Length: 263
Ligand code: T3D
Image (cartoon, rainbow, N blue to C red):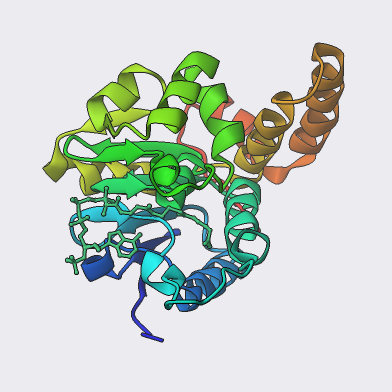
């Protein structure tokens, strides 16, 4: 295991996690899953952490599972690896459920589970040179890491089906046009833009943002009536937060609010 298969940088109010196996286009092996899980645990445990920026080192964001770990020796029979149950599913569940925003800064190729992990981030910004590929069909797999749930909801059924069945790469600019991601920016603007967003979140009413994430995640499956009830319940929680009181006070006093965030 390489200790540096991810890099973690602590900034004021947020953390930057960089997937760091550039020679394999930041493909996941078990060790990388484990250090990433630990880094996310640490970020969540730190009340001062109010956003997470996820990106990749080198020319890729992430190329999904490291296929070198899946190469069978002559005569060797395939065995279920349970990698979804053990690693990929907990990771995407975690990204969605973290009590602060996760910004995916897609710096280059995002393929296989790497593409769907990017799409599981709350806000995705991509460099113009980046691509998103549902590459699974090229090797006889099905799209995973939440892709079959998230992608059709982002781009519609027709596009999701075609992208998954053909494994055609989608350039970042097209991904933004079709609503797959939030923005495509010039390559040199990627980290400044993603960082600025995290700096904004670092002084935001974090508990309120966490409730927004919960409401949006539930809306994918709730009926309208269920969603109205959920909004009522979550808004009750939001109204009780010290940040709402501060937000109203600051508005009335015509000053910048000083939100407590997760404390
Ligand atoms: O088994 C399970 O656990 C099930 C779970 C599966 C989850 C998944 O993610 S399945 C999908 C796995 N990923 C892929 O199928 C993508 C494989 N990679 C590619 O198709 C291409 O590399 C890319 C489209 C991502 C980029 O193409 P290109 O031409 O820009 O780069 P390249 O030359 O193919 O790759 C550069 C190097 O990275 C190369 O190594 P080399 O020749 O320089 O020594 C290549 O082998 C390596 N690499 C890229 N992706 C992977 C990888 N090595 C291992 N695993 C990879 N996923």
